[in-house]
Length: 561
Picture (cartoon, rainbow, N blue to C red):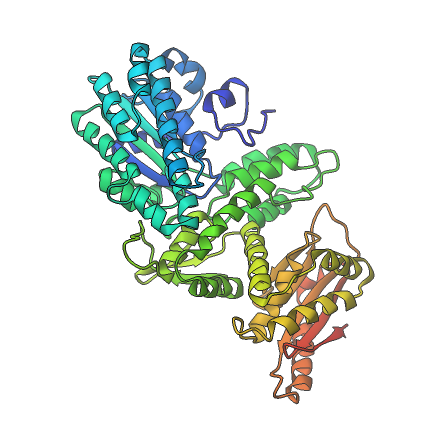
């Protein structure tokens, strides 16, 4: 059984050390035929680095003797292109640059460029020019000198995470971002030098990856010949896993555990699937890192799912890029976040770059969420796109961030330890009292804040925020059961065993109209009784149901059944 390559992005290591490698090398020929200069944007940890590593070993002239060993069993190895092993590879990786201030950024960028060029000189027989490169104190001049040294060569330029350090700068200092990547900035000058060498034929091909197009305008102003393949339908599944590929990976679980394909596939689909990068694409895609984490952490001895279905590394990555939420109008951005949590979708015009010489508007923010992986394409909507939250991992991250915003804006601290205790009482004793105390406290504080106008949706969202702070349950909001939509379902999730599952129906009445309370309770009870008659809900073991009624200050709970 092949080893799981969780956290490994070196193609040669994967092949030589018998790790699982999902063969997508048939895309290499498609890419060659499409364009000499390509740009691919995908969310963090989506397999971009492994793709670049694959291209590196496929095109490197020094790897020709290893071609059969590395690629012979793969699609492209059985049908190689004319360009295989015909280039010197110049490979930049920009994820390790510190962004404390302009001087730190400049020195980090300069050092990164210098190390890459020196490695190239050492590898391809230009060692005698090392001192010449080391004596230069400008990325632009360093590149010009380098290209003069290798004049007559033919290189394939690979750049991984071209926007990583720029994303960090943008999150903290928009003006500094403009100075560095804008006109006259050293980043644009760097790309202008590369563009000049595409015209001489030295840079014969290029493949550039990143997460967002926030620096695309700056990059393409200097290197304006790159074709952005990110939203092309034919490349929808080039990175990430399809359903068929996912089933092949999950087979190791089916071989060991007496568990159905349908059950496991349903679970991982809810947690890790849902990405679509073109509305016309036939299939949504699994995040590869999330899925490999699941396979790696699965308890094969007990046939249990991982206790933490959310990879801490993913959470950390998304936590860092959530800082980008404050770009532009923070209040409008918060409304977008609020709307997504309530409705799970939003409509906007898809753009392929940001222009920071004008105001950063709501449509820009929605696109930023898309490129970062917080939302994904769902369907066309006239000239716009309907975006949705892709999966439960991102769903939970939204609520974690929403909790932070509620605390900050409401000047309130939500005690996660007390919430854990409250949910344990609910899960094992069917005692909802402590949970409702925490809920009531949060409502009473937030009801007096101007930023959140309480209505039925918001009193539901606040409860969902509290519930999502615990991993004890799989929390579903308005999940369809025979075209009916209970407000909240708390469903048992492996490996945790609980005594009770729950159906919660939320009702809101205006504080100024207390006479509505009895009507809302009656309405809620009738709805819940209807839900409990549905076959899918009848199958749920130890299900308890409650109607929760609130005016934003007081909370009353009625048990049903």
